[in-house]
Length: 462
Picture 1 (cartoon, one colour):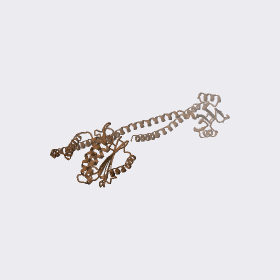
Picture 2 (cartoon, rainbow, N blue to C red):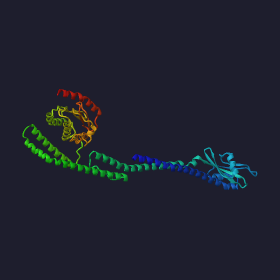
Picture 3 (cartoon, helix red, strand yellow):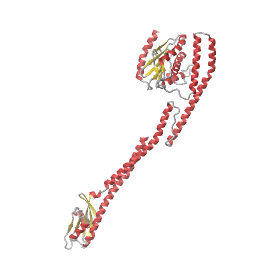
Picture 4 (cartoon, rainbow, N blue to C red):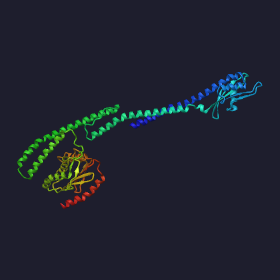
């Protein structure tokens, strides 16, 4: 917009300057010409009284000399009444032009080498017509024209530069609020709920800033309402959790009782975390700062140890690969654990008992990939499964599990893909970017080409 205003101002001002400067330059040239010939007419008029009195050469030469134009003036007196023709000065005009002026009896100008001449007829006392010739050089006709044109050009350039400067300032005044509006939209999209735009600038942009600030306030209010609702719903779970915790005391001792009590305690901690997080004003989708994060391999081993007991009860074969060495990722430990629990919970919830599953961790230079695969029936519509709130169509499915995983991956600049696994069922790939850049598709393809053989061989050896 700024450069568009500058270009329009440049074009309009240039046309206006040309429209006025060109005619004015021509007028200045004509004025200079008229001034030069007016001086020539005054010089010719200074000689006319002497010619009307006498035709004596000596006297006329003195008159011409006193006029100051003896080198540029000539007097042509015809013969008559026993008097010979008299020529004073240097003749530059053609004889035909002189004869024509004498015959017509009025002044005229004619071009000669180096300039022009003014031919002025003067009546003598004898009744004859003498012609006074005054030479006007070209330099005198154009005297001051070049300077005047230079001044016009300088004024025109100054006007153009001034208009461009004014248009640029106006453009800045219009563009700056627009840039602030764009920056505010980006900040709000990144989760900075305090982003606001100054309500200044042109009327239209000021109204846009008012609308943006109003929208941001509504977003903050909606998020606050959502957090309060999540906190309230989570708080309602405390009563049944208390009953469960009391009932676990009557289970006695044994692995199953210990696992039940541990699960209830973990569920209570998760509910407390949800309530505490929901009460906070800061968004929880921001990327982890320097030094934050967790060891993905340790979290995978821990969660697989938790789910292994249920897998053994249901006769499921399972395997973990790539979790034998530390793998640092820029996400919180609780967030990764929640994502893994959501995916593994889907495996147990939506596949028959005895269905095998696996978790693979691939550590690359700029990304970490976590693969959760199963040998179940698969997902007929992966895109629908990724849509929040739509679920898979099964009873009890809210569709929020995969959305939790997606938000975790996107907080690092990565993504989540759902497809078919080499085991014949569903494969969920979590791409966790280590440096915040977009995933590298080439490396992704290489990792996927290397994976199938390893997984298949591992399950054959199980």
